[in-house]
Amino acid sequence: MAGSDAVARYAAVARTATESVHYTNARIPPAFRTPLYRGVVTASAPTPDEPEGRRWVIPPWLAHVPIPPGQRLTLILDDTVLRRSIGGPKVMAEQLRHLMHLMDHPRATSPVTIRIAQRGYRTPANSEVAEYTVHGHRMIAGCRFLPRYEARSEDARSVQERLRDTVQRAQDHDVSYRLIKQAAERWEAAS
Image 1: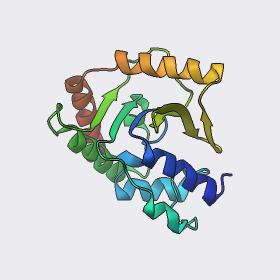
Image 2 (image 1 turned 45 degrees about the vertical axis):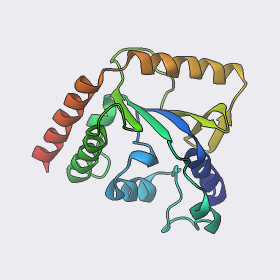
Image 3 (image 1 turned 90 degrees about the vertical axis):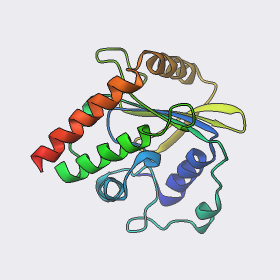
């Protein structure tokens, strides 16, 4: 299991990235979470991907890591994330409504892009992966069992290529919004 320092360093990398592109078929990444969803994930995940006060000692330095101005975030969700219950129907409905709210900003000015991956297409990872741009350098990162970072390996280049392809082939804004809205409505009806 990753220790609190390793998870905090991972969070710092994510926070300092000027651009990040996330793909997940498991859990919604930290930058896109509601407080309720965050609490469920950090309380129940065997390897949390962000430090949280009840389970971890949050290093004081993390609060001083700045978010760069103009940071751009892209999230590509596998549609299984829309159906997977994390925390139950109420938590999922609230989380999906939050994603819709993030998508509501004018597309030209929003630093956040959220899309649903094309179904049945080769994905960049078995679970979660991100590409972070930090100080002009791109790296592949993830936090499944332990935080990991790669930049120049053949594996990293392959994942970067598949991630970019997944972004290009993802559903457009309107289709993605509709799919997330339908899922939120199903979760609301189930609660």
